[in-house]
Image (cartoon, rainbow, N blue to C red):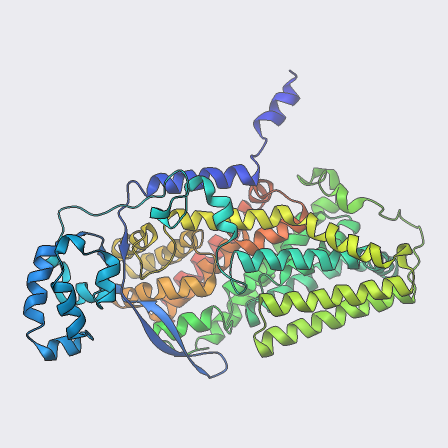
Length: 571
C-alpha cells in the first residue's frame, strides 16, 4: 500500500449514518448512569413580536425531582386523612368519591393508571406530600431496551430509525420535516428538468462577465436578513437547490452555496432583534420586553454578518483559484454534469423565463405567507408543489428539454428520491432525543436531569464567566433540542432566574440563548434543516463538519466577545 493510499485511508471521515449510530449508543449508555427527572409545568403569557398576547408551556425551576418508588402504604394513610378535609380536597382539585373509591381497593392493585383515574397523578401527589410518600433511598433510571417493547413506549434503541421517522406530526419533526423535504425535492425535480435554472445561471454569468462574485456577499446578507426577521431555517432547503448549482457553475464549491444560504440564515437567527420564533419567545418567557435591546442586536447582526461574509470570501477566492483543493470537489461533479463550457452560448428562451418567473413569484408568495400568515411546513410544501406543477406545465407547453406529462411525473419521483437519504437522516437524528426519553419537561427523562444539573453548576459563578457558560450551555444543549422555540421553553425558565442570582441581566441570558441556539445549528447533526441542505448539496455531514468547525470557532469567538461586552455595558 502506497503512502498516499495510507494517508487517504487515515483521514477518511465516517458516513453520517455511522456517526449518528454511535451518538445513539453513547446517549443510550448515558441513560444507565444518569437518573431521570422531571419538572412541573405551567403556562405563561407573553407578547409576541406583533404585540399579540400568547401563552407558552414552560417548566417551573423549583419543582425538579427525581423519580422515586411510591410508598403506597404511606400514601394511603395520608389520603385517609385528606378525605376528612373537604377544603383541602377542593384546593387539590380532587373528587372525594373517586378518592374514597380507590381507598377501598387493596394498595397492591394501585398503579399509575388507576391513581390518575382518581385524579391522583404524580404531579398532584407530589404537590400534596412532596417526598413524604416516596422511597428516596435511590433515584430511578430509565433506558430503552435493545428491541422495541411496550414497556418503553414501543421504542427500542435499535429501532431508532423507524421510531425517529414517525415522531411528531405535519407541523413538527420528524414527520413534518421528512414530508417537507420529499415534496420540495419532487417540485424542484420538475423545475430542474425544464433546464430553466441552468439556462438562467449561464445567462447571468455571460451578462455579468466576471462581476458575478458580487452575488456571494449579496446573497449572504439577504439570507442572514431572512434569519433575523422571520427565523429562516427550513426555508433555505429549496433555495439551496438553486444557489448551489449556481455557485458551482461560477467556479466555487457546494460548501460556499451552503454557507450563503443556510449558514447565513443561522447568523441572522443568532443575532436577530425580532425573530418571532426565537428571541421574541425567549424574551417573553424571561419577562423581558419583547423586541427590547434591538439596538445592540442590530449592531451585532451587522458586525457578525460582515465578518461572516469576509470569512467566506477568503475561502471562496481560494477555491476560485484552485477548485480541486475543495474537499467536496468530487461530489460537486454532480452539479458540473452538463455544465456549459466557457464561451459557449446557451439558449434562454421564453419558456425558461416563464419558469424562472414562476419560481420568483412562488418565492415571494412563500415569504409573504411565512411573515404575514405564519405559514409552516404544510403550507410551504403546498406552495412549492404548485410552483413545480406550474413550471412543469410550462415545460410541456414549450417542450423544454422535450418534456411530456410523464416526464413531469418521473421528474417529481426522481427529485424526491434524490432527497430520501436526507429524509432518513432527519429521522435518525430524532432518535437521539428519543433515546434520552424525549424533551417533555413534565415527564421523567434523562434530558431533564442534565438540564437541572447544568443549572445548578452555573450558580455561584462570576457574572461575566456565568454569561459565557450560559452561551456554552445553550450551544451544547442545541445538539439535543435544535428547535429554537423548544429550547426557549426548556432553558429560559432556568437561565432567566439564574441570571438574577449571578448578577447578569435577563437580557444577557436571552442573548446567550439566541447565540447558542443559532450558530450551533450550522454544524450539529441533529438539525433537520442542516441535514436537508446537506442532502441537497450531496455533502456528507462528516465532510461538512470537518470544514465548518473552523467557521464555528470563528463565530464562537465573536459570540464570547459579544456576551462579555453585553455584561460590561450592563445590557
